[in-house]
Length: 427
Image (cartoon, one colour):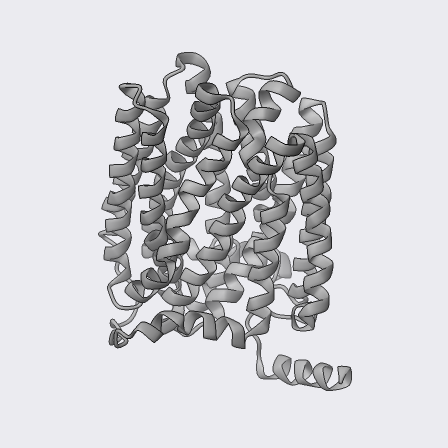
């Protein structure tokens, strides 16, 4: 069989697993709805207050519960049947989406929306580590990187279609409660699909519940400095370089567009990421994952600088798409690295720690952007964040040389010997 034919036979190998097909369908339905909700919330809050700080508070309300609950949530994930917990968390999203729909329909005060977001954040603290730690048990080990790549592609489809659909509904009707209701329905469908999953292998004995057990995820990450470097880099780069929270300001005040234009801007990074995910599904396993990760973050920082300075809608869309494309490289590398190098009995707790980093970067990054935009303006906020991302990349690469030397994501004995030889030569 030719090399091209061999690649063609493996680009969708994860879909040969019935468990993965059911899981992927749930991710698509639930993710599409939640992306619609995330877009509608930003527009809803901006239309009601026209205060950049209120946009920042959206991120804060979503992130703080995850930061507070992540460690106990990780221990719960490692003690229960994960597919059942996944179904319960999706029912939780259904309830919070319904609450936000009712609050919007009856024009409740803005603080009620923040309560709904905070409750959804509590659910997210359990959902993210459950979903990610469950995936390795749904596919064969040799299919795992392909499954992660496809999961990333599905997420990008949701993140493109969701904002566009939300923007269209908002532009045509101006009714945010309709969007929130669709999100609740999508999560209900995911809950039903998750309840039918049948993970591979017998259930392992649950680890004993101890207060110290919550910190075993931190201990594992600190020991594997490649994982530490990857998630630290993502935390700091997106914390400084993210611009999502300010998109309503750019849409209305800088680029002079409407709600559908906001949907296009919000979808652009994910369109770029989807394009990149398609290419990565066809490529072989990373051989020099560390340099690929570092250069992808450099590209993300440059893209954010271009977006911050742009006054043209289509240049802004292109810059966001380019940033999403290179960011997808780091997403796949980080997810495969974390899951492949973590024992199954620790996956919930390690993924929970990773979720803290993700939430801090994405949502608290939005809060940081809102504060800087309030004080110095949105353009300064975005451009300075892009510059900060470049500086962070240089700093992490210097601080953790293990990340620069990272080769294959799943190391063979020969890879380990080569890494040891490099470390010795650096001494």
